[in-house]
Image 1: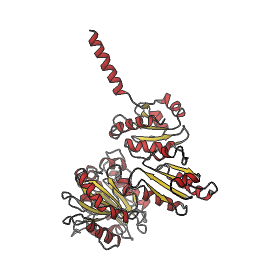
Image 2: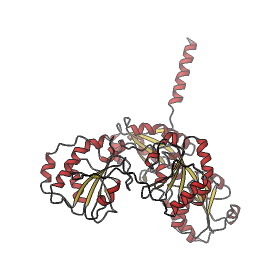
Image 3: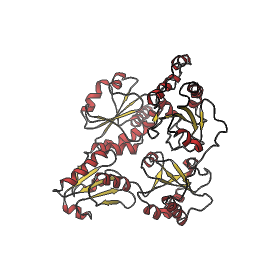
Image 4: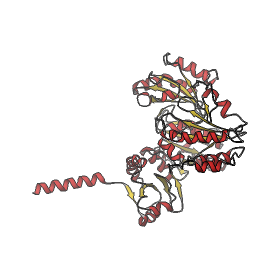
Length: 501
C-alpha cells in the first residue's frame, strides 16, 4: 500500500511538472494589476476552438520560458470566458497579440508566431530605442539578438546622434540599437567616429557603416548587412525576402549537404551582388512544389531561379544545365544587365470572350486589366478553392448586371486562374478580388467585404472612376439569395491560402 501511495504521488508530481506553464492566465479581475505590475507584457487574446491559437500555443509556451529569465512576461486571456475584457481591448479575431507597457501604452505585436521570433521581438521591445553601450556591457549587447547595431559617435557630434536615434526609433521592431561616445571603445572595435557597426551571428560577424549619417543610407545599410549572404527560404523568412524590395535568387536542393555545396560555389556571386540580389537556398524535399511557382519543373533538382519580387517576374535557369559557378555567374550577370526576358506562364487567350465575366490570362492581362479607360474588377481564383466555387454564381450574376447596364463599355467584371497564369499582383490567398480604376491603374483597391452581389456593386460604385451603380441594381440584388457565409473575405482567404511557404 505504501509503495502504491508513493507511485501515485510520484505520478501526480510528474503531471504537475508537465503541466507547469510560464504563460500567465489572466482574467478580468487580474488583468489590470498584472499589466501594471510588470514593465512589459505580451498578451494573447484567444479562443480554445481557434486552430491558429492551437498552433501558436507550444511556440508561445516556449517563448515564455525563454523570456522568463529576462523578466519579460507572457500572458493569455480566454475570450470565450472573458468577453468584456477582450471587447475592451478591441479584439476582433483570434489570436490577437498585444504588447503592454502599462494600460495606456499598448501596441500590436508585429512579429511572426514562432518561439524564436516572439523571443527576439520582445527582447527588442523591452529595450529602449537606443541603449547605452560601454566596454563593460558591449559583449553582452552584441548577443542581445542575431543582429544588433551600435553607433560610435563623438559626444560633440549631436547631428549624427540625432539621425541615428531617428532610425532606431523607426526600426526598433527590427533590431536592438546601441550607442557609445567612448573614443577608445570605437578604436578597440576598429572604427573611427562617427561609424556604425552591425554585429551579427552569421557570415563575417560584422559590417561597418562609415559614410555620412543620413537616415535613408543607414536604413539601406541595415537591411543589406543584416540579410545573410546566402540565407534559407522557409515559412519564417519567406515574407521578409518578398518585402525586401530586391530580387531573390533561389537555390533548390534536396539535402543539406547539396545546399551547402552549391552555396559555396555560388558564394562569390552573392558577394558581388550583395544589395542587388538576395540569394537563398530552399529545401526542395520540403518545398519543392514552390519551384512550379517560379516556372521550374517541380520534380527535377537541384534547380536555380531568380524572382523579381516587386513585379513578380520569374527567371528560371535551364534545368538541363548543371549548376556551376560559371554558369550561374553568366546567368546572373545577364539578368542584372536586363538581357533575360522573364518567363511567362499563360493559358491560351480564349477564342471567344463575350460572357458576362471576362476571362483573363497572362497574355491578355495588360490589355484588359490595365485598360486605362475602364474600371476593371478582377477575381484571382484557384480551381480547387471552395470559396471561389461558392462565389462563382454570384460573380456571374454581377457580370450579367453590368453587361446589361449603361456602364457596359466602362466596367469590366473579370477573373483569372492565378495558378495557371503569371500575374504581376502578389496574391496571398483565394479568392482575391481587386478593382483597377480607370485612370488610376497604379492604385488598385483590394476588396475585403462580404461576398454578395449588392456589396460588390457598392464597392465598384465607391472606388471606380465612373461610380457605376445602375438604377435597377438595388431591386435585382435584393432578390438575389442571401449570403450564407458570415465571415469576411479576408477571414475566408486565410482558410484558402495555398502557399507551402
